[in-house]
Image (cartoon, rainbow, N blue to C red; front, top):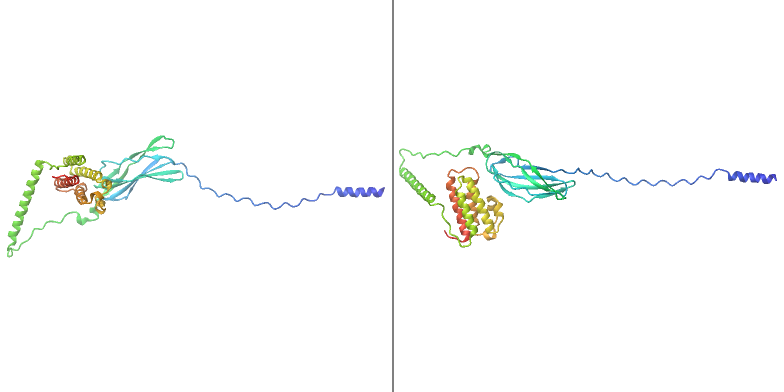
Length: 328
């Protein structure tokens, strides 16, 4: 009996002993790699416009570039700026098509102009108002501010050309005059006679008015440009008259011979370009007339500006007559 109780006590002690410790947990898995930090998003762009003018130093006769930039939020559209007209100090040569640079958070709309400086002094590129259309269809406007600039003269860099060479009369020795004096007097009389003849022709031409050009029936475009040349000749300012005549002649040639580049290319550029297909035989006459008009449009001012204008307009009329197959 006692042995049975001792055996039960031993079994009870074994059952109530400490529990077996659980197996050690496997090593924890490494944490996932952290995502790289993203670049901060730029703040949304607001509407603003600016004007950039290059080069900063402009000399008389130089061609310079003007860029109008408009910054908008993505998805906005900007209408092209109007080409400035009748701005003192320079003339617009051409305007490029607008372009857009799409960057995160903003779009930059560009429009570039090319202009030629025609007189010295301080001037201002005019302020331009541009229309902006939002993605939802709402419209608003933004103004590109004025940009001051200065056109300088070339005389500061080339002072030796500040004045023309002086006239030196021929010196004849007392003992060696020989036949030189009669030859000189004869040359002077000949020059005087030629000058008098030219004066008489000019007076008659002014009294008779500009010579008429006979055109073939149906040449309405040629008649219109000839009327524009007559209107330009009546302008009191030879420079303004040359501007009007050059613009009318360029428009006629571009339309008549299907060559749009004749409207915006400079005369120097036209001289270096091959002639359009339909204008091969008359290209030299057109370029010559434009060069004669450009000589009056840009400084220096000519002494006989009115006479040179008449001769340039006569060349322009001759080109129109040859283009339409007319006869004087």
